[in-house]
Image 1 (cartoon, rainbow, N blue to C red):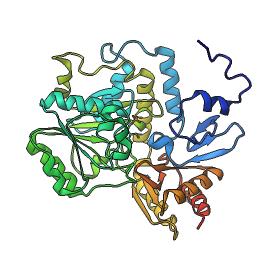
Image 2: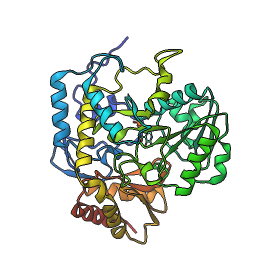
Image 3: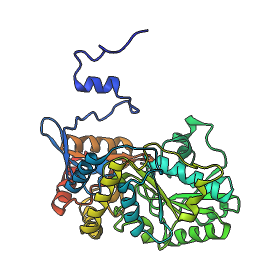
Image 4: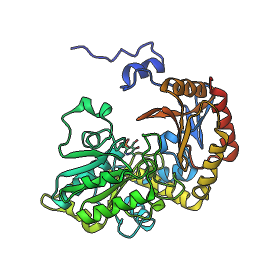
Length: 402
Ligand code: PLP
């Protein structure tokens, strides 16, 4: 047997990154980050990047907000991990759950904290099956809910899903924002899982009437409505929650990404009576060791408090309008947006990739969307200023090759 202990001798950090940190893309960006603050990331050389994607909709309150960093330090002085989730009273969990419940509709009052968004999806599907005694799940084409096997089963894209079959049985994928799709929701459906805004499709918000009809159909058939706000939540759409735009309330809400203020965390949220299903026959209906880690909860609480105190959410619509006003060019086919979740569409992935690479060269970090590779992702920290938006748009426009 041979060991790798000396493998890294003589290698620089980039070489060690390529050799020892597992990759899932053949050509990772490979930019070394020395520091991050506000809307900027910095290389060891001091080169700054404006972060126009906010860690993929995570850093709504910016990188390392001082209140978040302080909350992390304070909690680190008290305790880190103490026991698997849900047994001991850990004040950061209790306080954050209480703050979330106070800012959610009354029926979303019981918070199960997980490690990630995908785990929240898994937990919600399990809860729906247990609570309804049904097995079928309705999901939507071009939706993304995570990369674990269960979450992958409800992912709405065959290209990304197919290599991992067999997946969960009983999942039906139907068209999003199409009235006829709702007929697939029946009294055999445990839950319908939908993103409030389809992000990875390249930002696609459904019609209000369709969302209302979806809610209504779930009520008629007894199927639970699971809304995934892992990307759309925490003010990104201009309201605290995406479903606020539609005047509906899901039975189960999925949160993640910005939930932890930059620390890893997800959550599935329901009424306490529904959530109670997980406590019996068998007990421990969902188990997680690290879900709701005290540091993540402390950071998430501080981040949400900042978001509630600052005016950023109320400024989202004006900032969105400024991006829309500035990003006009013959190469831009369309700009779809829902608040500060935006997709700039080009003719092809190749063109988009070239623009993204040019932007990165010029110190602006952006990306493409999973199911819409021809679309550039714009999802900055909500605290981005008007001047920074002008700067960012100038870089994008100067990066267009045609
Ligand atoms: N749901 C949506 C809408 C997402 O955008 C994501 C992640 O991009 C997830 C679920 C999965 O979250 P995680 O990557 O934390 O597992």
